Amino acid sequence: METSNLSPSTVFCGTGASHLLHQARVLARDLTRVSEENRVRLERAGRPAVPVSPSPSALLPVTWLHPLPLDTEDQKTFREVLMGFEEDLSLYRLEEHALSKHAVELHRRTGGYFKALTYVISTAAIIAIRSGSENITLKEINAATAQLG
Image (cartoon, rainbow, N blue to C red):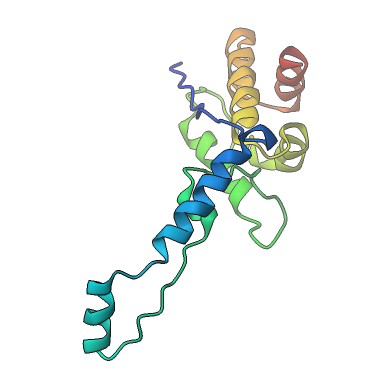
């Protein structure tokens, strides 16, 4: 079985990096300036030369990582991710909806976080291969969760 590790690097920028937000706010104020050249061009076009300030957070190289939702407005997301795993798993006796039918339990155990979900599913798949079952059931999920701690 070929495994791939889809593990994005994440940098947490907490209270110790408030200077970054401060720099973004300064930059945002600088971007609200309208040069004389642009002011004249806008006035000729019949548009007011009112500067529009971007959000300071839009200027930061930040990606917010949230857990995948389960049973919210977007009820399909987590289950669609599980179906994607089901399609890509190379287990000879993988039952249809092997992961999807355990969506609530997998979400509870992983908090909906993709990285944790990847670890649980890949560990459960390895356990299934080693045991010869070639299928992921709650037994393999339990064993994977216990192994991962």
